[in-house]
Length: 204
Length: 204
DNA sequence: TTGTGCTTGTGCTCACAATCACAAAGTAAG
DNA sequence: CTTACTTTGTGATTGTGAGCACAAGCACAA
Image (cartoon, rainbow over all chains, first blue to last red; front, side, top):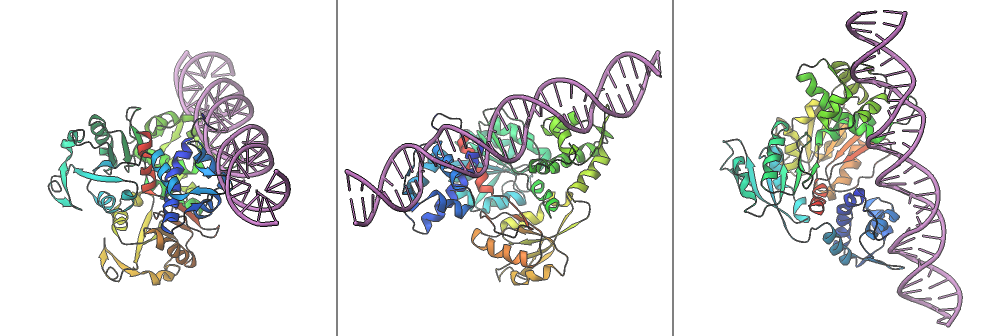
């Protein structure tokens, strides 16, 4: 299995595995088998083993995985080891919710800056951060901020993405319902909430 | 192609196609080809044609698709034709953002009820809706509400899902980072925002 | 009615992902 | 040491989806 191409889908699952492992750590469990983890997360045990095996031998045959070791390794693989300085663009309702969302902390993301284009919002404080003018996005590089969260309306999203790329950002989490065009070196992950909801009635 | 199994991935793309078609309708375009739509949404034209072909012959060879007809058909396929009465559970920051999010209206979702377990929130008004006690979830059936949006913390999510199922709900949009166990007849779509962000540093 | 040009609809192939099933490798007991 | 038992790591198989490339079909012009 070593030396093989790592499926994108495996990467996608790793944060979920991490969440499960953190749960087991909380309960005080020292060890966990692929089967126990699979039961908790509702995955296939073989898939979990194979996903981890792309990155090394983390388990002991006949025993299972050490929870804390595997947490550390998973964090390593996902490069969640150190804090990630993040900027949020868009201080509307969605932006506010993102700021208040506790989930980001778990993975080591720190939202250090908030931007908006609305003069009425600029200068105001939200969750302890002062809203800045989007025209100051270029200061991100100096501040060591390397990730951006786009929570603007669709029409503004591409423009914001361009500015983020100019500011040297390496990854974007995009909540705007719009496909962002960026250089290959920049990774974009888009979450289109309404789109997900749009297919719900089909199954009902 | 008729009589073939419809890939889940095709269903997932339909709301995106709908968004693109609505854009073309706004610009006043009467017709659109799979290539033009693909350019706009950054898909493969053949994929768009194949996805629609699972549901019927909507285009005219040599001409393309009629925008308004295809919008109507797509809405039909996704069962977005009539309004969908929806309940929101969890009136925290995420819940508030969802209430204010304009995207739901596009697909015909009406959030008619908001629930929370926090006594301090119950009775208060949020975006024009009065927050109700979660113990009143059973009233949903009477009110004709058939979809639920779960925006609670993870530990409460399963309990809420159970109550929603009891109330006769047919679909759940789940924002809690937790796998929900429901009867097969109920469709769950989970959006784990932090999880998506969790894989961003890996690529950076 | 025949020819030209365009775009759909789809059979086929390739690529990738999920799962099975088993050898390998560990523990523990006698 | 040997046997029984457990769980990992992975080769092999099966399943699923994406995209190519072309026949089918329509419009329009002559």
